[in-house]
Picture 1 (cartoon, rainbow, N blue to C red):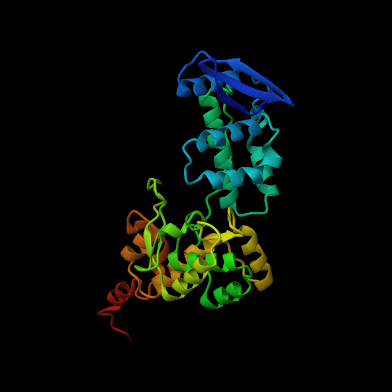
Picture 2 (tube, rainbow, N blue to C red):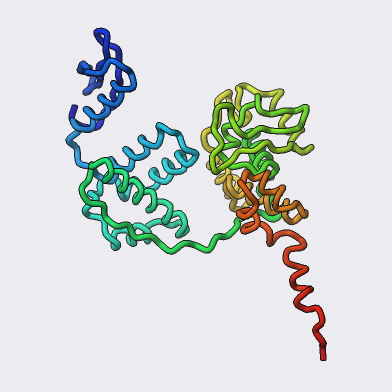
Length: 331
């Protein structure tokens, strides 16, 4: 069983066996466990013990992501995307080779913001912690991180939004844009939305799938305004699957390419997450309370909302400025 190869646990002689392929040749080995859960754990231990390939960064991060996939956290897809961008640099690196200079060199090669590189290197650091805890490596190198960026809200002014929206061509992407700006939902919540959770009569959308536990990134019930209602009704009539955002009857896993194309055509740079910020800023500018906006955004309380969006409210700290000036005698 040398090398990392896929395997399955199958029934065999009243118990279980681990089954794997090397080329076209099938191999199997009887397991001692007679319960499925125990057999899975036994197979996992056998597989890891029999794999004599070195624990490179590639093997460590992919092993860590596979470990995370069992609990399917909301951050899983983002971590997969981050590793995809990191793999060419880090994949074949031995942990013992990592030092500050290598991390700084990686930062210099990545044409992205410090915050993105910081997230990627934190993923590397967390994966190394996991590998050490599992005793796959003896020593865990320290990971240099770039300084935290000052958090900036990236949103579209209304004119820029219209320019961008006009450059979005495909129907599924246009519907996504309206959902993004009017529901202020996170991209994953929109892509996973099914028609069964769109209530046309009450004009509401339940962003949380049945069976999904609410996490720190809450998925609330949000309203449907008139423009979005019309767009959803039209899409519902033409639907080919259970998913709201679909193409040719298949759900869309990522909308990034459509955004990149529209950004190029319009000259207005926007990402799926830009729409969440855009809708929140517009709501604050219109005088929506931070408590109501927090509820719409799925924040547990309005402290996070206040921190990022309160300054866009028309009356932001206005009374404080007036009180400071009160009673001053001008010469």
